[in-house]
Image 1 (tube, rainbow, N blue to C red):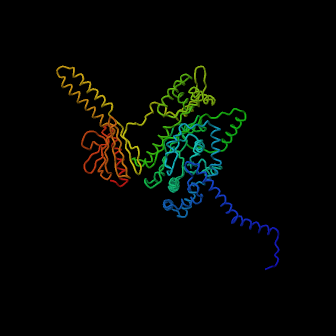
Image 2 (cartoon, rainbow, N blue to C red):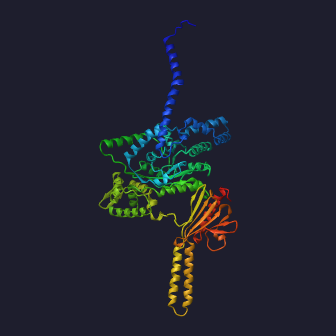
Image 3 (tube, helix red, strand yellow):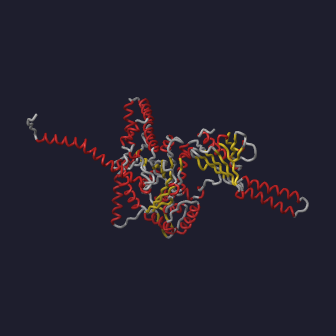
Length: 619
Protein backbone atom coordinates (compact mmCIF):
# COMPACT_ATOMS: atom_id res chain seq x y z
CA UNK A 1 0.00 0.00 0.00
CA UNK A 2 2.90 2.32 0.71
CA UNK A 3 4.93 1.29 -2.30
CA UNK A 4 6.16 3.98 -4.63
CA UNK A 5 4.57 4.15 -8.04
CA UNK A 6 6.42 5.82 -10.83
CA UNK A 7 4.51 7.66 -13.53
CA UNK A 8 5.69 9.56 -16.54
CA UNK A 9 5.19 13.32 -16.36
CA UNK A 10 2.63 13.32 -19.19
CA UNK A 11 0.48 10.77 -17.31
CA UNK A 12 0.61 12.84 -14.12
CA UNK A 13 -0.40 15.95 -16.04
CA UNK A 14 -3.26 14.05 -17.68
CA UNK A 15 -4.53 12.73 -14.30
CA UNK A 16 -4.35 16.20 -12.72
CA UNK A 17 -6.18 17.67 -15.70
CA UNK A 18 -9.01 15.11 -15.42
CA UNK A 19 -9.21 15.75 -11.67
CA UNK A 20 -9.40 19.50 -12.24
CA UNK A 21 -12.15 19.08 -14.82
CA UNK A 22 -14.12 16.80 -12.48
CA UNK A 23 -13.79 19.26 -9.59
CA UNK A 24 -14.75 22.15 -11.85
CA UNK A 25 -17.80 20.32 -13.26
CA UNK A 26 -19.10 18.94 -9.96
CA UNK A 27 -18.15 21.60 -7.43
CA UNK A 28 -17.08 24.94 -8.81
CA UNK A 29 -19.37 25.33 -11.84
CA UNK A 30 -22.62 24.44 -9.95
CA UNK A 31 -21.61 26.77 -7.13
CA UNK A 32 -20.83 29.65 -9.49
CA UNK A 33 -24.00 28.97 -11.47
CA UNK A 34 -26.08 29.02 -8.27
CA UNK A 35 -24.37 32.22 -7.10
CA UNK A 36 -24.91 33.99 -10.41
CA UNK A 37 -28.52 32.79 -10.66
CA UNK A 38 -29.28 34.11 -7.16
CA UNK A 39 -27.79 37.48 -8.09
CA UNK A 40 -29.83 37.49 -11.30
CA UNK A 41 -33.04 36.67 -9.40
CA UNK A 42 -32.41 39.57 -7.00
CA UNK A 43 -31.71 41.87 -9.95
CA UNK A 44 -34.96 40.79 -11.63
CA UNK A 45 -36.90 41.37 -8.38
CA UNK A 46 -35.54 44.92 -8.22
CA UNK A 47 -36.27 45.41 -11.92
CA UNK A 48 -39.87 44.24 -11.52
CA UNK A 49 -40.48 47.00 -8.98
CA UNK A 50 -39.78 49.56 -11.70
CA UNK A 51 -41.75 47.90 -14.48
CA UNK A 52 -45.45 48.55 -14.99
CA UNK A 53 -45.93 44.88 -15.86
CA UNK A 54 -43.36 42.63 -14.11
CA UNK A 55 -41.52 39.88 -15.97
CA UNK A 56 -43.48 36.64 -15.51
CA UNK A 57 -41.84 33.44 -14.13
CA UNK A 58 -42.71 31.63 -17.38
CA UNK A 59 -40.41 33.99 -19.28
CA UNK A 60 -37.59 33.45 -16.76
CA UNK A 61 -37.83 29.66 -16.74
CA UNK A 62 -34.90 27.70 -18.11
CA UNK A 63 -35.27 27.06 -21.81
CA UNK A 64 -34.87 23.29 -21.49
CA UNK A 65 -37.63 23.13 -18.85
CA UNK A 66 -40.02 24.99 -21.14
CA UNK A 67 -39.14 22.69 -24.06
CA UNK A 68 -39.91 19.60 -21.96
CA UNK A 69 -43.14 21.09 -20.67
CA UNK A 70 -44.17 21.83 -24.24
CA UNK A 71 -43.43 18.42 -25.78
CA UNK A 72 -45.16 16.58 -22.90
CA UNK A 73 -48.28 18.72 -23.19
CA UNK A 74 -51.35 16.44 -23.74
CA UNK A 75 -52.43 18.25 -26.91
CA UNK A 76 -48.93 18.04 -28.37
CA UNK A 77 -48.77 14.35 -27.41
CA UNK A 78 -51.97 13.68 -29.37
CA UNK A 79 -50.57 15.63 -32.33
CA UNK A 80 -47.42 13.46 -32.17
CA UNK A 81 -49.52 10.28 -32.43
CA UNK A 82 -51.52 11.69 -35.35
CA UNK A 83 -48.33 12.83 -37.09
CA UNK A 84 -46.79 9.36 -36.72
CA UNK A 85 -49.89 7.68 -38.19
CA UNK A 86 -50.21 10.16 -41.05
CA UNK A 87 -46.55 9.80 -42.07
CA UNK A 88 -46.08 6.07 -41.33
CA UNK A 89 -43.32 6.56 -38.77
CA UNK A 90 -42.67 5.39 -35.22
CA UNK A 91 -44.01 7.58 -32.44
CA UNK A 92 -40.57 8.08 -30.91
CA UNK A 93 -39.36 9.53 -34.24
CA UNK A 94 -42.37 11.85 -34.35
CA UNK A 95 -41.63 12.85 -30.74
CA UNK A 96 -38.08 13.76 -31.74
CA UNK A 97 -39.49 15.90 -34.54
CA UNK A 98 -41.78 17.68 -32.07
CA UNK A 99 -38.83 18.29 -29.75
CA UNK A 100 -36.86 19.78 -32.64
CA UNK A 101 -39.76 22.10 -33.38
CA UNK A 102 -40.01 23.08 -29.71
CA UNK A 103 -36.29 23.89 -29.48
CA UNK A 104 -36.62 25.93 -32.65
CA UNK A 105 -39.49 27.96 -31.19
CA UNK A 106 -38.77 28.37 -27.47
CA UNK A 107 -36.53 31.36 -26.64
CA UNK A 108 -33.94 31.63 -23.91
CA UNK A 109 -34.73 35.00 -22.34
CA UNK A 110 -31.90 36.89 -20.65
CA UNK A 111 -32.89 39.87 -18.52
CA UNK A 112 -29.31 41.13 -18.69
CA UNK A 113 -29.23 40.95 -22.49
CA UNK A 114 -32.63 42.64 -22.77
CA UNK A 115 -32.34 45.44 -20.22
CA UNK A 116 -28.57 45.70 -20.08
CA UNK A 117 -27.82 45.70 -23.80
CA UNK A 118 -30.90 45.63 -26.03
CA UNK A 119 -32.73 48.60 -24.50
CA UNK A 120 -29.63 50.82 -24.60
CA UNK A 121 -28.81 49.72 -28.15
CA UNK A 122 -32.43 50.30 -29.27
CA UNK A 123 -32.48 53.79 -27.77
CA UNK A 124 -29.12 54.71 -29.33
CA UNK A 125 -30.08 53.36 -32.75
CA UNK A 126 -33.54 54.96 -32.73
CA UNK A 127 -32.29 58.39 -31.73
CA UNK A 128 -29.32 58.17 -34.11
CA UNK A 129 -31.52 57.54 -37.13
CA UNK A 130 -34.74 59.41 -36.32
CA UNK A 131 -36.28 62.19 -34.32
CA UNK A 132 -38.55 59.95 -32.26
CA UNK A 133 -41.87 61.37 -31.11
CA UNK A 134 -44.74 59.88 -29.09
CA UNK A 135 -47.73 61.26 -31.01
CA UNK A 136 -50.44 59.81 -28.74
CA UNK A 137 -49.48 58.10 -25.48
CA UNK A 138 -53.01 57.20 -24.27
CA UNK A 139 -51.53 56.84 -20.76
CA UNK A 140 -54.87 56.86 -18.94
CA UNK A 141 -56.23 53.90 -20.93
CA UNK A 142 -53.00 51.92 -20.55
CA UNK A 143 -52.84 52.54 -16.80
CA UNK A 144 -56.45 51.34 -16.46
CA UNK A 145 -55.63 47.85 -17.81
CA UNK A 146 -56.07 45.08 -15.24
CA UNK A 147 -52.62 44.29 -13.75
CA UNK A 148 -53.42 40.56 -13.94
CA UNK A 149 -54.31 40.65 -17.63
CA UNK A 150 -51.97 39.56 -20.41
CA UNK A 151 -51.07 42.54 -22.59
CA UNK A 152 -50.42 42.01 -26.28
CA UNK A 153 -49.23 44.98 -28.34
CA UNK A 154 -50.53 44.71 -31.91
CA UNK A 155 -48.72 46.87 -34.47
CA UNK A 156 -48.66 47.74 -38.13
CA UNK A 157 -45.43 46.56 -39.77
CA UNK A 158 -43.72 49.40 -41.63
CA UNK A 159 -40.05 48.57 -41.15
CA UNK A 160 -37.71 46.23 -39.33
CA UNK A 161 -37.00 49.28 -37.17
CA UNK A 162 -40.42 48.60 -35.61
CA UNK A 163 -38.82 45.99 -33.34
CA UNK A 164 -36.14 48.43 -32.22
CA UNK A 165 -38.43 51.42 -31.74
CA UNK A 166 -41.16 49.67 -29.75
CA UNK A 167 -38.63 47.74 -27.63
CA UNK A 168 -37.20 51.05 -26.44
CA UNK A 169 -40.52 52.89 -25.99
CA UNK A 170 -42.06 49.98 -24.03
CA UNK A 171 -38.97 49.52 -21.83
CA UNK A 172 -40.65 51.09 -18.80
CA UNK A 173 -43.67 48.83 -19.10
CA UNK A 174 -42.31 45.33 -19.60
CA UNK A 175 -40.08 43.05 -21.64
CA UNK A 176 -41.74 42.22 -24.97
CA UNK A 177 -41.76 38.81 -26.63
CA UNK A 178 -41.81 39.08 -30.43
CA UNK A 179 -42.78 36.53 -33.04
CA UNK A 180 -39.94 36.68 -35.58
CA UNK A 181 -39.85 35.19 -39.08
CA UNK A 182 -37.35 32.78 -40.58
CA UNK A 183 -35.26 35.60 -42.04
CA UNK A 184 -33.68 36.21 -38.60
CA UNK A 185 -32.54 32.61 -38.10
CA UNK A 186 -28.97 33.48 -39.05
CA UNK A 187 -25.89 34.18 -36.98
CA UNK A 188 -25.69 36.36 -34.91
CA UNK A 189 -29.36 37.42 -35.00
CA UNK A 190 -30.64 34.01 -33.89
CA UNK A 191 -28.83 34.13 -30.56
CA UNK A 192 -29.70 37.78 -29.99
CA UNK A 193 -33.40 37.32 -30.77
CA UNK A 194 -33.66 34.34 -28.41
CA UNK A 195 -31.84 36.17 -25.62
CA UNK A 196 -34.37 39.01 -25.97
CA UNK A 197 -37.29 36.59 -25.58
CA UNK A 198 -38.32 36.43 -29.24
CA UNK A 199 -39.56 33.18 -30.73
CA UNK A 200 -39.20 32.05 -34.33
CA UNK A 201 -42.11 31.00 -36.50
CA UNK A 202 -42.10 29.28 -39.87
CA UNK A 203 -44.22 30.92 -42.51
CA UNK A 204 -43.49 28.14 -44.98
CA UNK A 205 -42.76 24.40 -44.81
CA UNK A 206 -44.85 23.81 -41.70
CA UNK A 207 -47.25 20.96 -40.92
CA UNK A 208 -50.03 20.20 -38.40
CA UNK A 209 -47.53 18.99 -35.78
CA UNK A 210 -45.47 22.18 -36.05
CA UNK A 211 -48.59 24.35 -35.87
CA UNK A 212 -49.76 22.51 -32.76
CA UNK A 213 -46.40 22.97 -31.02
CA UNK A 214 -46.39 26.66 -31.94
CA UNK A 215 -50.02 27.11 -30.89
CA UNK A 216 -49.45 25.52 -27.49
CA UNK A 217 -46.37 27.67 -26.85
CA UNK A 218 -48.31 30.84 -27.69
CA UNK A 219 -51.22 29.72 -25.50
CA UNK A 220 -48.93 28.82 -22.58
CA UNK A 221 -47.15 32.18 -22.77
CA UNK A 222 -50.45 34.04 -23.01
CA UNK A 223 -51.99 32.19 -20.06
CA UNK A 224 -48.82 32.83 -18.04
CA UNK A 225 -49.19 36.59 -18.56
CA UNK A 226 -46.19 37.14 -20.85
CA UNK A 227 -46.35 40.56 -22.51
CA UNK A 228 -46.11 40.06 -26.26
CA UNK A 229 -45.83 42.11 -29.45
CA UNK A 230 -47.55 40.88 -32.61
CA UNK A 231 -47.70 42.17 -36.18
CA UNK A 232 -51.15 41.08 -37.47
CA UNK A 233 -50.15 41.80 -41.09
CA UNK A 234 -47.55 39.03 -40.89
CA UNK A 235 -44.95 40.96 -42.89
CA UNK A 236 -43.76 44.35 -44.04
CA UNK A 237 -46.19 46.47 -46.01
CA UNK A 238 -45.08 46.57 -49.67
CA UNK A 239 -47.53 49.30 -50.66
CA UNK A 240 -47.19 51.58 -47.64
CA UNK A 241 -50.82 51.01 -46.66
CA UNK A 242 -51.88 48.68 -43.87
CA UNK A 243 -52.47 45.14 -45.08
CA UNK A 244 -55.11 42.59 -44.20
CA UNK A 245 -54.56 40.78 -40.90
CA UNK A 246 -53.13 37.26 -40.91
CA UNK A 247 -55.09 35.17 -38.43
CA UNK A 248 -52.50 32.58 -37.35
CA UNK A 249 -51.32 33.84 -33.95
CA UNK A 250 -54.67 35.54 -33.29
CA UNK A 251 -56.55 32.27 -33.83
CA UNK A 252 -54.10 30.44 -31.51
CA UNK A 253 -54.82 32.95 -28.75
CA UNK A 254 -58.58 32.70 -29.29
CA UNK A 255 -58.52 28.89 -29.33
CA UNK A 256 -56.77 28.79 -25.96
CA UNK A 257 -59.01 31.39 -24.33
CA UNK A 258 -61.89 30.28 -22.11
CA UNK A 259 -64.09 33.19 -20.94
CA UNK A 260 -64.50 33.20 -17.20
CA UNK A 261 -61.57 30.90 -16.42
CA UNK A 262 -58.65 32.09 -18.56
CA UNK A 263 -56.58 35.12 -17.71
CA UNK A 264 -57.98 38.13 -19.56
CA UNK A 265 -56.06 39.23 -22.65
CA UNK A 266 -55.92 42.93 -23.53
CA UNK A 267 -54.82 43.96 -27.01
CA UNK A 268 -53.13 47.38 -27.20
CA UNK A 269 -53.07 48.84 -30.75
CA UNK A 270 -49.78 50.54 -31.67
CA UNK A 271 -49.38 52.58 -34.86
CA UNK A 272 -45.94 53.46 -36.25
CA UNK A 273 -45.02 55.76 -39.09
CA UNK A 274 -41.76 57.10 -40.50
CA UNK A 275 -40.46 59.92 -42.65
CA UNK A 276 -38.21 57.31 -44.20
CA UNK A 277 -38.56 53.53 -44.24
CA UNK A 278 -35.07 52.13 -44.75
CA UNK A 279 -36.40 49.23 -46.82
CA UNK A 280 -38.69 51.36 -49.01
CA UNK A 281 -36.95 50.69 -52.35
CA UNK A 282 -36.73 46.96 -51.64
CA UNK A 283 -40.42 46.78 -50.68
CA UNK A 284 -41.55 48.74 -53.74
CA UNK A 285 -39.47 46.50 -56.00
CA UNK A 286 -40.83 43.35 -54.35
CA UNK A 287 -44.39 44.59 -54.85
CA UNK A 288 -43.68 45.33 -58.52
CA UNK A 289 -42.23 41.83 -58.96
CA UNK A 290 -45.08 40.18 -57.07
CA UNK A 291 -42.90 38.41 -54.51
CA UNK A 292 -42.59 38.51 -50.73
CA UNK A 293 -39.31 36.60 -50.50
CA UNK A 294 -36.33 38.50 -49.16
CA UNK A 295 -32.83 37.10 -48.87
CA UNK A 296 -31.01 38.11 -45.73
CA UNK A 297 -27.39 39.13 -46.21
CA UNK A 298 -24.89 40.89 -43.99
CA UNK A 299 -23.14 42.57 -46.94
CA UNK A 300 -25.68 45.40 -47.47
CA UNK A 301 -25.79 45.96 -43.71
CA UNK A 302 -22.01 46.39 -43.47
CA UNK A 303 -22.08 48.57 -46.59
CA UNK A 304 -24.81 50.71 -45.06
CA UNK A 305 -22.96 51.02 -41.71
CA UNK A 306 -19.74 52.03 -43.46
CA UNK A 307 -21.52 54.64 -45.60
CA UNK A 308 -23.30 56.20 -42.61
CA UNK A 309 -20.07 56.18 -40.58
CA UNK A 310 -18.26 57.96 -43.40
CA UNK A 311 -21.06 60.53 -43.65
CA UNK A 312 -20.76 61.20 -39.93
CA UNK A 313 -16.99 61.62 -40.18
CA UNK A 314 -17.31 64.05 -43.10
CA UNK A 315 -20.21 65.94 -41.51
CA UNK A 316 -22.73 65.03 -44.22
CA UNK A 317 -24.97 62.81 -42.11
CA UNK A 318 -28.61 63.75 -41.65
CA UNK A 319 -31.12 61.78 -39.66
CA UNK A 320 -33.99 60.21 -41.54
CA UNK A 321 -36.56 62.66 -40.25
CA UNK A 322 -39.30 61.81 -37.79
CA UNK A 323 -40.48 58.47 -36.45
CA UNK A 324 -43.75 58.64 -34.53
CA UNK A 325 -45.65 56.14 -32.40
CA UNK A 326 -49.24 56.22 -31.14
CA UNK A 327 -51.10 53.94 -28.73
CA UNK A 328 -54.76 53.25 -29.43
CA UNK A 329 -57.71 52.14 -27.33
CA UNK A 330 -57.13 48.75 -25.62
CA UNK A 331 -59.49 45.87 -26.44
CA UNK A 332 -60.33 43.27 -23.80
CA UNK A 333 -60.70 39.76 -25.20
CA UNK A 334 -63.28 38.98 -22.50
CA UNK A 335 -65.45 41.85 -23.70
CA UNK A 336 -64.91 40.87 -27.34
CA UNK A 337 -65.88 37.24 -26.74
CA UNK A 338 -69.13 38.34 -25.10
CA UNK A 339 -70.23 39.78 -28.44
CA UNK A 340 -71.63 37.63 -31.22
CA UNK A 341 -69.42 37.13 -34.30
CA UNK A 342 -69.75 34.59 -37.06
CA UNK A 343 -65.97 34.39 -37.55
CA UNK A 344 -64.29 35.55 -34.36
CA UNK A 345 -60.63 35.46 -35.52
CA UNK A 346 -61.49 37.44 -38.66
CA UNK A 347 -63.64 39.92 -36.73
CA UNK A 348 -60.91 40.39 -34.12
CA UNK A 349 -58.27 40.95 -36.80
CA UNK A 350 -60.40 43.54 -38.58
CA UNK A 351 -61.19 45.34 -35.32
CA UNK A 352 -57.53 45.49 -34.27
CA UNK A 353 -56.38 46.80 -37.66
CA UNK A 354 -59.15 49.42 -37.57
CA UNK A 355 -57.99 50.62 -34.15
CA UNK A 356 -54.40 50.82 -35.36
CA UNK A 357 -55.48 52.82 -38.39
CA UNK A 358 -57.44 55.30 -36.26
CA UNK A 359 -54.29 56.41 -34.40
CA UNK A 360 -51.80 56.26 -37.28
CA UNK A 361 -49.39 59.20 -36.79
CA UNK A 362 -49.14 61.65 -39.65
CA UNK A 363 -45.52 62.81 -40.02
CA UNK A 364 -44.06 65.33 -42.53
CA UNK A 365 -42.96 63.13 -45.47
CA UNK A 366 -46.20 61.08 -45.74
CA UNK A 367 -48.18 64.31 -45.33
CA UNK A 368 -46.26 66.06 -48.12
CA UNK A 369 -46.31 62.91 -50.26
CA UNK A 370 -50.09 62.77 -49.99
CA UNK A 371 -50.34 66.38 -51.14
CA UNK A 372 -48.05 65.70 -54.10
CA UNK A 373 -50.02 62.62 -55.04
CA UNK A 374 -53.22 64.69 -54.97
CA UNK A 375 -51.81 67.03 -57.60
CA UNK A 376 -50.03 69.87 -55.77
CA UNK A 377 -47.29 71.07 -58.11
CA UNK A 378 -45.83 74.10 -56.34
CA UNK A 379 -45.24 75.23 -52.78
CA UNK A 380 -48.32 77.44 -52.55
CA UNK A 381 -50.68 74.69 -53.71
CA UNK A 382 -48.97 72.16 -51.47
CA UNK A 383 -49.14 74.43 -48.45
CA UNK A 384 -52.86 75.18 -48.93
CA UNK A 385 -53.74 71.54 -49.55
CA UNK A 386 -51.77 70.30 -46.54
CA UNK A 387 -53.26 72.99 -44.28
CA UNK A 388 -56.78 71.95 -45.23
CA UNK A 389 -56.06 68.25 -44.75
CA UNK A 390 -54.37 68.83 -41.38
CA UNK A 391 -57.29 70.94 -40.17
CA UNK A 392 -59.81 68.27 -41.16
CA UNK A 393 -57.71 65.46 -39.67
CA UNK A 394 -57.28 67.26 -36.34
CA UNK A 395 -61.00 67.95 -36.14
CA UNK A 396 -61.48 64.17 -36.15
CA UNK A 397 -58.84 63.60 -33.46
CA UNK A 398 -56.12 62.29 -35.78
CA UNK A 399 -52.59 62.53 -34.35
CA UNK A 400 -50.80 64.86 -36.80
CA UNK A 401 -47.26 65.67 -35.71
CA UNK A 402 -46.38 69.25 -36.66
CA UNK A 403 -42.68 69.86 -35.91
CA UNK A 404 -42.26 73.04 -33.85
CA UNK A 405 -46.03 73.61 -34.31
CA UNK A 406 -45.12 75.28 -37.61
CA UNK A 407 -46.94 74.01 -40.70
CA UNK A 408 -44.61 75.84 -43.10
CA UNK A 409 -41.62 74.20 -41.43
CA UNK A 410 -43.37 70.82 -41.64
CA UNK A 411 -43.88 71.18 -45.38
CA UNK A 412 -40.25 72.21 -45.82
CA UNK A 413 -39.06 69.18 -43.81
CA UNK A 414 -41.06 66.82 -46.01
CA UNK A 415 -39.94 68.48 -49.25
CA UNK A 416 -36.29 68.58 -48.19
CA UNK A 417 -36.30 64.85 -47.44
CA UNK A 418 -37.63 64.04 -50.91
CA UNK A 419 -35.35 66.52 -52.69
CA UNK A 420 -32.22 65.27 -50.87
CA UNK A 421 -32.99 61.72 -51.98
CA UNK A 422 -33.23 62.87 -55.61
CA UNK A 423 -36.90 61.93 -55.90
CA UNK A 424 -38.18 65.44 -56.46
CA UNK A 425 -36.86 68.62 -58.03
CA UNK A 426 -38.24 72.11 -57.44
CA UNK A 427 -37.84 74.25 -60.56
CA UNK A 428 -39.32 77.51 -61.85
CA UNK A 429 -42.33 75.63 -63.21
CA UNK A 430 -42.99 73.78 -59.97
CA UNK A 431 -42.30 70.29 -58.71
CA UNK A 432 -41.07 67.52 -61.00
CA UNK A 433 -41.16 63.88 -59.86
CA UNK A 434 -38.98 61.29 -61.53
CA UNK A 435 -40.39 57.74 -62.01
CA UNK A 436 -38.75 56.41 -58.85
CA UNK A 437 -39.94 59.47 -56.95
CA UNK A 438 -43.52 58.87 -58.07
CA UNK A 439 -43.39 55.32 -56.72
CA UNK A 440 -41.95 56.52 -53.40
CA UNK A 441 -44.53 59.30 -53.09
CA UNK A 442 -47.33 56.76 -53.62
CA UNK A 443 -45.71 54.45 -51.04
CA UNK A 444 -45.55 57.07 -48.30
CA UNK A 445 -48.90 58.68 -49.14
CA UNK A 446 -50.64 55.32 -48.74
CA UNK A 447 -49.71 55.18 -45.05
CA UNK A 448 -51.97 58.14 -44.21
CA UNK A 449 -54.49 58.06 -47.07
CA UNK A 450 -57.18 56.45 -44.89
CA UNK A 451 -56.97 59.46 -42.54
CA UNK A 452 -56.71 62.30 -45.05
CA UNK A 453 -58.99 61.28 -47.90
CA UNK A 454 -62.55 62.50 -47.48
CA UNK A 455 -64.16 59.58 -49.29
CA UNK A 456 -62.57 57.10 -46.92
CA UNK A 457 -63.33 58.91 -43.69
CA UNK A 458 -66.37 56.95 -42.60
CA UNK A 459 -66.60 57.19 -38.84
CA UNK A 460 -68.62 54.87 -36.62
CA UNK A 461 -71.93 56.35 -35.63
CA UNK A 462 -72.20 57.66 -32.10
CA UNK A 463 -75.99 57.43 -32.32
CA UNK A 464 -76.25 53.68 -32.41
CA UNK A 465 -77.46 51.20 -29.84
CA UNK A 466 -74.48 49.12 -28.71
CA UNK A 467 -73.00 47.04 -25.91
CA UNK A 468 -70.48 49.35 -24.23
CA UNK A 469 -69.32 46.93 -21.54
CA UNK A 470 -69.45 43.16 -21.27
CA UNK A 471 -67.65 41.31 -18.48
CA UNK A 472 -68.22 38.28 -16.28
CA UNK A 473 -70.16 40.37 -13.77
CA UNK A 474 -71.83 43.07 -15.85
CA UNK A 475 -73.29 43.90 -19.25
CA UNK A 476 -74.18 47.49 -20.21
CA UNK A 477 -76.15 48.61 -23.28
CA UNK A 478 -76.26 52.29 -24.24
CA UNK A 479 -79.15 53.64 -26.32
CA UNK A 480 -78.58 57.27 -27.38
CA UNK A 481 -81.36 59.80 -27.72
CA UNK A 482 -83.20 59.74 -31.02
CA UNK A 483 -86.07 61.62 -32.63
CA UNK A 484 -85.13 65.08 -31.30
CA UNK A 485 -85.28 66.70 -34.74
CA UNK A 486 -88.50 64.89 -35.72
CA UNK A 487 -90.23 65.71 -32.43
CA UNK A 488 -89.04 69.31 -32.59
CA UNK A 489 -90.35 69.82 -36.13
CA UNK A 490 -93.64 68.11 -35.28
CA UNK A 491 -94.12 70.12 -32.09
CA UNK A 492 -93.19 73.41 -33.75
CA UNK A 493 -95.53 72.71 -36.64
CA UNK A 494 -98.37 71.90 -34.24
CA UNK A 495 -97.85 75.02 -32.10
CA UNK A 496 -97.58 77.23 -35.18
CA UNK A 497 -100.78 75.71 -36.56
CA UNK A 498 -102.58 76.27 -33.26
CA UNK A 499 -101.44 79.91 -32.99
CA UNK A 500 -102.56 80.76 -36.53
CA UNK A 501 -105.85 78.98 -35.87
CA UNK A 502 -106.65 81.50 -33.12
CA UNK A 503 -106.67 84.30 -35.69
CA UNK A 504 -108.46 82.28 -38.35
CA UNK A 505 -112.10 82.55 -39.14
CA UNK A 506 -114.34 79.61 -39.89
CA UNK A 507 -112.63 76.29 -39.29
CA UNK A 508 -110.25 77.84 -36.79
CA UNK A 509 -111.34 75.49 -34.00
CA UNK A 510 -110.60 72.40 -36.10
CA UNK A 511 -107.16 73.78 -37.05
CA UNK A 512 -106.48 74.64 -33.40
CA UNK A 513 -107.37 71.12 -32.24
CA UNK A 514 -105.24 69.63 -35.05
CA UNK A 515 -102.29 71.82 -34.06
CA UNK A 516 -102.58 70.71 -30.44
CA UNK A 517 -102.65 67.09 -31.54
CA UNK A 518 -99.46 67.55 -33.58
CA UNK A 519 -97.80 69.33 -30.66
CA UNK A 520 -98.78 66.54 -28.25
CA UNK A 521 -97.46 63.85 -30.58
CA UNK A 522 -94.16 65.77 -30.85
CA UNK A 523 -93.95 66.09 -27.07
CA UNK A 524 -94.66 62.35 -26.66
CA UNK A 525 -91.93 61.42 -29.16
CA UNK A 526 -89.51 63.71 -27.34
CA UNK A 527 -90.51 62.15 -23.97
CA UNK A 528 -89.98 58.53 -24.98
CA UNK A 529 -87.01 59.18 -27.30
CA UNK A 530 -84.51 60.15 -24.61
CA UNK A 531 -81.31 58.15 -24.03
CA UNK A 532 -81.53 54.98 -21.95
CA UNK A 533 -79.11 52.56 -20.34
CA UNK A 534 -79.66 48.86 -19.66
CA UNK A 535 -77.45 47.29 -16.97
CA UNK A 536 -77.42 43.57 -16.14
CA UNK A 537 -75.49 42.70 -12.96
CA UNK A 538 -74.85 38.99 -12.33
CA UNK A 539 -73.48 39.69 -8.83
CA UNK A 540 -76.67 41.31 -7.50
CA UNK A 541 -78.93 39.31 -9.82
CA UNK A 542 -80.79 42.45 -10.94
CA UNK A 543 -81.24 44.29 -14.21
CA UNK A 544 -81.97 48.01 -14.46
CA UNK A 545 -83.24 50.26 -17.25
CA UNK A 546 -82.63 53.97 -16.70
CA UNK A 547 -84.31 56.39 -19.12
CA UNK A 548 -83.43 60.07 -19.15
CA UNK A 549 -86.57 62.19 -19.46
CA UNK A 550 -86.79 65.91 -20.27
CA UNK A 551 -86.02 68.38 -17.47
CA UNK A 552 -83.65 65.86 -15.83
CA UNK A 553 -86.45 63.52 -14.70
CA UNK A 554 -85.13 59.91 -14.59
CA UNK A 555 -87.35 56.89 -15.16
CA UNK A 556 -85.99 53.67 -13.68
CA UNK A 557 -87.24 50.08 -13.88
CA UNK A 558 -85.59 47.15 -12.09
CA UNK A 559 -86.16 43.41 -12.44
CA UNK A 560 -84.64 40.10 -11.44
CA UNK A 561 -82.45 38.45 -14.06
CA UNK A 562 -84.07 35.11 -13.24
CA UNK A 563 -87.48 36.60 -14.18
CA UNK A 564 -86.38 37.25 -17.77
CA UNK A 565 -88.37 35.14 -20.21
CA UNK A 566 -86.92 36.51 -23.44
CA UNK A 567 -85.13 39.44 -25.04
CA UNK A 568 -86.93 40.46 -28.21
CA UNK A 569 -87.17 43.10 -30.84
CA UNK A 570 -90.26 45.22 -30.29
CA UNK A 571 -91.55 44.31 -33.74
CA UNK A 572 -92.59 41.01 -32.16
CA UNK A 573 -94.13 42.61 -29.06
CA UNK A 574 -97.37 44.47 -28.64
CA UNK A 575 -97.32 48.19 -29.13
CA UNK A 576 -95.64 50.63 -31.49
CA UNK A 577 -91.95 50.98 -32.27
CA UNK A 578 -89.15 48.57 -33.05
CA UNK A 579 -86.77 49.04 -30.12
CA UNK A 580 -85.35 46.51 -27.65
CA UNK A 581 -87.71 44.79 -25.17
CA UNK A 582 -87.02 42.69 -22.07
CA UNK A 583 -89.97 40.29 -21.57
CA UNK A 584 -90.51 38.93 -18.05
CA UNK A 585 -92.20 35.66 -17.10
CA UNK A 586 -95.26 37.49 -15.72
CA UNK A 587 -95.86 39.06 -19.12
CA UNK A 588 -94.38 42.47 -18.34
CA UNK A 589 -92.60 44.06 -21.30
CA UNK A 590 -89.79 46.46 -20.32
CA UNK A 591 -88.84 48.64 -23.24
CA UNK A 592 -85.19 49.64 -23.46
CA UNK A 593 -85.58 51.68 -26.68
CA UNK A 594 -88.52 52.84 -28.79
CA UNK A 595 -86.49 54.11 -31.72
CA UNK A 596 -87.69 52.79 -35.08
CA UNK A 597 -84.33 53.04 -36.84
CA UNK A 598 -82.74 50.90 -34.11
CA UNK A 599 -84.52 47.82 -35.41
CA UNK A 600 -81.49 46.01 -36.86
CA UNK A 601 -79.26 47.16 -34.00
CA UNK A 602 -81.81 45.87 -31.50
CA UNK A 603 -81.71 42.44 -33.15
CA UNK A 604 -77.93 42.27 -32.81
CA UNK A 605 -77.83 43.63 -29.24
CA UNK A 606 -80.68 41.33 -28.19
CA UNK A 607 -78.72 38.33 -29.45
CA UNK A 608 -75.66 39.44 -27.47
CA UNK A 609 -77.77 39.80 -24.31
CA UNK A 610 -79.23 36.32 -24.74
CA UNK A 611 -75.74 34.88 -25.21
CA UNK A 612 -74.50 36.69 -22.07
CA UNK A 613 -77.41 35.34 -20.00
CA UNK A 614 -76.97 31.82 -21.38
CA UNK A 615 -73.23 31.74 -20.63
CA UNK A 616 -73.99 32.53 -16.99
CA UNK A 617 -76.75 29.92 -16.70
CA UNK A 618 -79.46 32.52 -16.10
CA UNK A 619 -81.69 31.42 -18.95
